[in-house]
Image 1 (tube, rainbow, N blue to C red):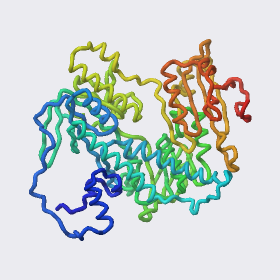
Image 2: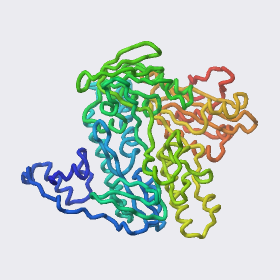
Image 3: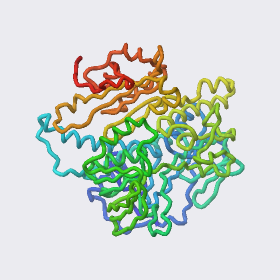
Image 4: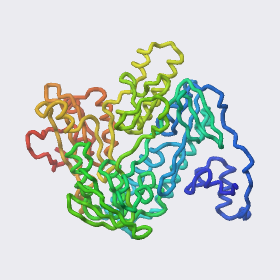
Length: 560
């Protein structure tokens, strides 16, 4: 039975009709929302006997079949179509265990990652600006220290649904055969998929796996009734919750855990953050410590060396959690439990294909000369499922574009393999990234610990400085500063091997340094550059104090 709930079926429950580009559809939704349409309640159409039509010819042999509709897959298909390759794309999202939430075309970044994360993070920054407003002469105050969660959630979801809709439209516009179906690769190295209770097998000259990953769940506690998958949420659920998660236990110590804990705190929730070891342990440890200093306090507590020994569900939104904090038993009552303990790659699609899977990470292993190409010549992998590459959206985006060119030129046969790899291979070195913690952190290159391990402590020099951003200097309650660190080889050339920045708009500050690192920037290059005043970033061009010297690195003046 098919009820006339078109906007839910097509766009999801949060869709904003203003985002619809079709005038006819827009008029329909506006009329429906205003109540001027006749009451169609109870009207239904029996479509059970109508068989769905497959949107492409399964007997066609495509230049490329793409499994996965995230950044890597989308980048590949768009570039492949520009080059004239025939492409079909499969996309499928398993619902989340607790809430049954699923999403449209665009992958993790658009739907449950970078995009909603930064918007929720920005909501916290806006709150901080409102607190600063009084010292800037504005008569502004918050009526409630907690955000209107439903408003934020709805507006963010509207934006996401608009992106989903534009992607689907784009696929049709550029001639990509797109289908929402679960696909995998069989022993014959063909693509198999189910559609309308019928299984199909599709041949292709090339197959691209870009299925990404999903959040990992803790193993259930032996003898306990509590089931983590049934009761806990993850970042896949968080941005679509109908209401605020309330007091939240965030489990995990990586950047996703800290980002979520940070904006939940700023949005007015009590937060307890726990991890079995330290926090941000793969990042620069000096800066990791400063991030925690900025986060902890008020309504956020953080405990390392902590494990969960038992959880009791006391009510629908009430959990009693037994913790072991550095060997000492403690209890905590929370409304939600958010797991952010890592992600597992969706490599089940290649289990029967002959593709080599790393036994530890369960990711696809590529080749030394071409990491995206598997041991099966015509099967490639992109993005987070690929062993040894950063799990970052721009990485998947760039590698997808370059892969399309390699496949195109292999089909064309005018360039040698050596020429193709030289011109269109992905460079995975010196990739900048940002942690959207309360005070943002961005970096490119090696952190201090990595530099010491690679070069030796006596063979590196670290320049650093701490400053108070001018914008915060007249805020009477400000306690935050910015910190920057430049790591160089300790020799005559002083080649830069790591640049780190903790402060406002960190990603915007470090973006340009990513290019500079690719070009082999030196300390002299930086010293010879004139910064823009007054900004925090200008202090990179005036770094004189080394960590080795032990001198005071905190800047107190302004224009000297």
